[in-house]
Amino acid sequence: MPSLQSLRRKIAAFKNTQKITKAMKMVAAAKLKRSQDRILAARPYAHKMRGVLSNLSQRVNRTSHPLLQKREGKKIEILVVTSDRGLCGGFNGNIVRKSSEFVRQCEAQGLSVNLSLIGRKGRDYFRRRSWPIRQEWTGIFDKLTFEHAIDIGGDLTENFVKGTFDELYVVYNEFKSAIQQRVIVEKLFPIDAAAEFGAAPSATGQSAVGGSYLYEPDEGELLNALVPKHFQIQAYRILLESAAAEHGARMAAMDGATRNAGQLIKKVTLYYNKTRQAAITKELMDIVGGAEALK
Image (cartoon, rainbow, N blue to C red; front, side):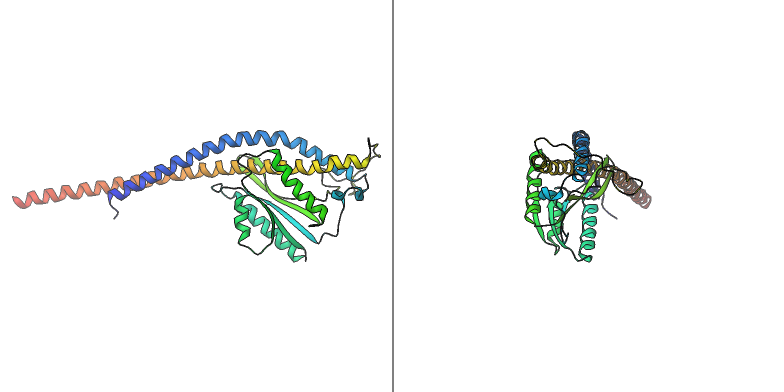
């Protein structure tokens, strides 16, 4: 039977843990509100931009811009977006499982796969595996800005143009609500003509293409300005989605941990009271027994 002192120490440790998890939940809730406002403000613009580029790619000559060119697709790059910190439930576990599964599917088709990683958790996981890692970014979610998206988007577009990879896929958590995230595998390079968000297929299965566009100043200058900006905006949206989903997952995880700590405190306190009562009863019986013996 454990001593009363050890039980008191255990109860105090559980209470301290409960205070920490409750504080982390409150911090995550505050950060979630800001992140949620940012992603809800950025989504419409990013989705409309992708819709415009998807529509435009059906009308222009795809060889007129290197970021629109379709290749054989033998070299695949996968951008995996995880968090820099843990204690957020299954947020990172779901991402690395989905990424590993997708890598194995690509390898089974005879494709060459490289990884680019955002976040320390994904970096630490894939460093212990045999898959090649081309680029890493860590520590960007503490003060996430559009400059991070410019840096990441610039690196990816530069390597796509150089032929480092033929197609780029990104695996990340899409923010749905404070308690729900969805793992998404999305193709970024090259732009797919049917990749517009929410686009419904036509009755014939072909995407509807209207009349031609008039370009001012010309098609080449428009694509040079619009296409790189599109990838920067999509990178920024993906980072915002992941940041909001991380805070939501952490808030839910810390809320569950706080409740579990409360249940443990009640359980151990009840056991402590029973043990203390048994010890007092035993002492009283010893006293009564001694008094009877003296008589």
